[in-house]
Image (cartoon, rainbow, N blue to C red; front, side, top):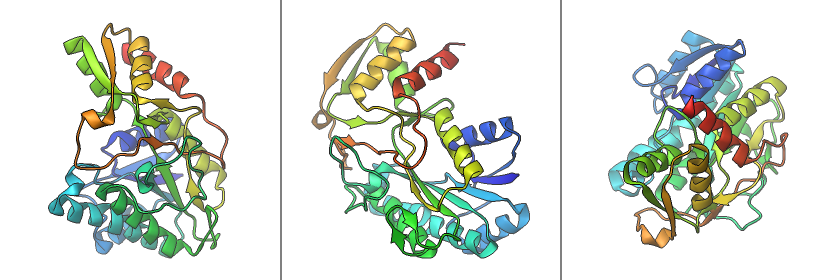
Length: 292
């Protein structure tokens, strides 16, 4: 089976390419300048050239702070909003299954129990979240009226997979930044009032491959790991398994003023697919691979 990964040079894209090849898929990656998802013509051209059996979109404008500026919001609206709609429309025309990767930022925060896939987001807290929600709405419009967390048109073969607190090798993310700062400075301050569910890229890739294999009902999916934690607890676990001696001091989100509003609690509940392993086990495997 051949599948096309759009945005193949990012943290998610590189992992999907590697894991797909490991299990024997014919994986093709595409990024700028090979494909511009904001252009309907560019999208149709690459799909007709590659002729994939499935398309995965991991391309996105991810500068949360930058999206708060007029220029950044304009770019993010095109990439995160228009782009997914262009891909979904082109894939549906060709009968090609399409998986779009979205984010917990489409919500404006959750309670401690988290949000399941059938909860409809309200108004996102920041500009980045608004652009990602635009993309979701464009896909849902193409897929048909939403019924719970599934799409009413079961022949649409369109999927939205929301991610949060993703970490892995090969790109700058929370885990890498904390580890580097701990090594160089011997101390780090990490917020203890931001709660979420860490997700290792390897575990997400396995989730996605199972989605491709099983072909469940088109709709929305949350591949969260078991359990939740604060950023402080997350960092403590990471440094412990990386054997990095450093002083970790808890602090608050308010200690780091930002342009973009960030939710204190953002937990995605996976109620539709087999449960993933606890986040602590994910951190342990990440650290083991890092040390070798």
